[in-house]
Image (cartoon, rainbow, N blue to C red; front, side, top):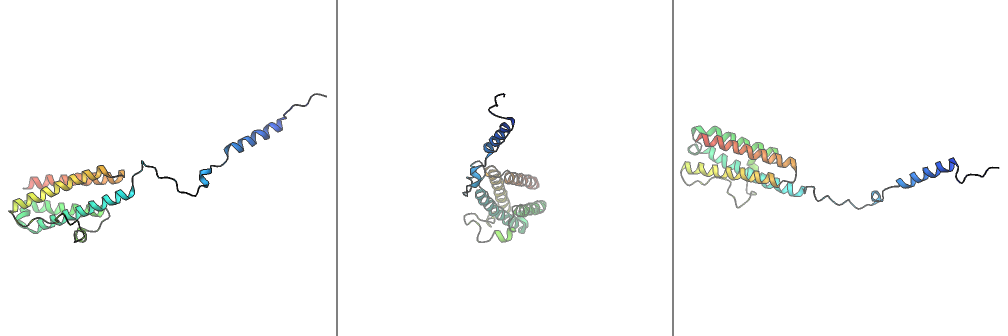
Length: 177
């Protein structure tokens, strides 16, 4: 009788199958009830929320300043009235884009106490108009800075677009005076 082989074909196949099953196993991390640590490269959603809240306050104050200028025909002037109306509508649209309430409800006493939401009543109409343009340029710069500091790429694009829109309106205001 011939010598029996150490491993038969059936034994080899069963052994290989068992090896595959044992080597795949299950991941022990799936069974861990603790939450996975947050990836530090992901943006902090709370930081973006705080940034949006601050930008909303600044936009509401800017809209209030523009409404004050619109109410004073000497500041608006005949050529600047349409530009101020477009600027006010732009600020309202930006507030809506950020999910905030209208400027009328945001620019109340809860707004930042250090920044005056309206133009100073003293000075000539030309000086008050220059003051408005100065505030709008500061807002445009602040929106650009906020777009850089935003953690979310989508928020950064929105804020950069807002900054560009304010810059365009400033160019219109500059040519109208």
